[in-house]
Amino acid sequence: LSYLKRKGWANSVAAAVQDDLGDFQNFEVVVGLTSQGLASVNQVIESIYSYIGMIRERQTPSYVVNEVLQLEELQWRFLTKGSPRNYATGLASSMQKYDPALYVAGPRRIALDGVIDGSPRVGFTSKDQLDRTIAKIERFSDYLSVENALLTVLSKTFQDVTDKKEKWYGTDYRVRKIPPAVLDSWKSPPSPKKLQIDFPPPNPFIPNEAGLSVRNPAAKTINAFERTFESRLTPLVPPRII
Image (tube, rainbow, N blue to C red; front, side, top):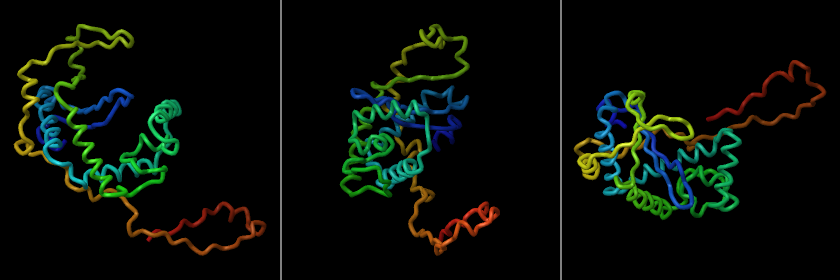
């Protein structure tokens, strides 16, 4: 993202598995393009394949994988209430993949081999588990090839140049082949060093509870019948965090 922002081509980048079925997965990379980025969309994709090539050629740093796990565990620990419909359909899918103890936690966490319940973690259970996770990242990156890609570009500027209409939603669109020269440039992108892109540095702002303790005041026995109506409205003093 820092490279694309330096070029003035993008404001955001997001990557995640969108469809995870029994026989295939869709891994989406979504780039929020600027007007300059839309005009240079081929170079934007070229830089993405340069980054994918870096993942293949260099082992993903362990701190990157550890940070992903910590963020996923924080999100799992403080999960907010979502849509009941999405929860029900997600739960039905999880029942086909995970043990009963992980029906809810499974799709929301990573590196679950050896994990037997939904208790939050602060790191990998062992170095071997971390190494297996990094190896899986490398194997997964092999599938992110130009031959397996489907490119979709969305813009209001295409309003008058479409020639097809989607059957169910009536969306206007156009399908065209990508020139062989462009495909070749994606297959052999510039090196990460030339583009000045690299793995992100360690993130010091991921919250954790190391060094924190909660001091609760001594409990006092209160006779409920002796409390006045006004005292019942007074909120309890929260514990002090040191």
